[in-house]
Amino acid sequence: MTPRRPIAATLLAAVLAATPALLAPPAARAADEVVDVDAKTLKSAQDAFAREFDTADIDYKLRALRSYSKVVHPKVAKDLMKLLDDADRNVVAAAAAGLGLQLTSAKSAGPRLQKLIEEHEADEEQAKVVQAAVRSIGALEHRKAEKDLKGLVTHGDDGIVAATFEVFGRWKSDFALREMLDFFKRYPDEKSFATGTVSVDTGAEGSADAEAAKAKWKSKYGGQRGWRPRPECTKALIAALKEITGYGFRRPEDLEDYLKDPKKYVDPVSIGERMSEDDRKAVYVAWCKALEEATAEAARKVPGDAAGDERAKVYRARLNELRGEILEKHRLRLSELDVIVEQGEAAKWPKG
Picture (cartoon, rainbow, N blue to C red):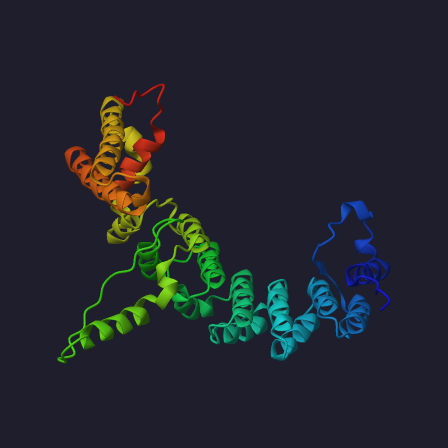
């Protein structure tokens, strides 16, 4: 098969030839620059797209579609919206992503994209479609989709959830803060997860209650998707919360405190101003000693290299106890302890 001329080059040549205002030196034009064109220039772009898109090669199709999407015009947006009904969901995803560039057609494109996010099957290809639609909805500022976006916070696909958080952050929208808190509690950092417990009383004998509880747990927490960290989502969540509230929440407890009364919320980072250096140094020393004590106790109670997991459990349990004592003694929040420990320097603050 003879390689076709890249669609980006074809479109750029057409645009430059037909629009004097765009006759800038090639070096001054970004290769992926979005081009807002008039009706005369549009015809060349449409003809080029028709030629390049008419192929069985999906890579050529998607390349043509992505390049055509960069030509901003209501008729281009209309063509892209027609492709949202294409049988190939790779084409649908590319068309949905392209609509995010069509800012002049936001009113017509937004509702079409909103319909896509209502169809969020647990399917990898459809997930790409939904993710693209979410990001384009964000770019087009289609705020009427907020309710549907809020429903995606509990989605099983990491890309969709991360994209949803990004949109709320971009809009600085507090519409889903409660749902974001629930997610934060389940995935408090990029390496951890926590779900919860449920109970069921069926009135039956044997293991009926346990089986029913297991089914209810899976329904509530998403089966095995509730048993793993989701770093992409947690990272996007924390970044979005920073955009929305202005605070870089380190733990879900912080967001919970903020939601109780945003006006009275105290940023943990300010602990350096609210607590003397001597007191912070004492906290740092106590924490270092707690680490040493937890390590020693774990090694004593669970000796041997083969018992690593069990020893880790003992270590975490003891460290949590000691941490609780430090927090109570110094009247600190977990995140305030985090800040003090992160700011502690061995050269400046000796461990003991």
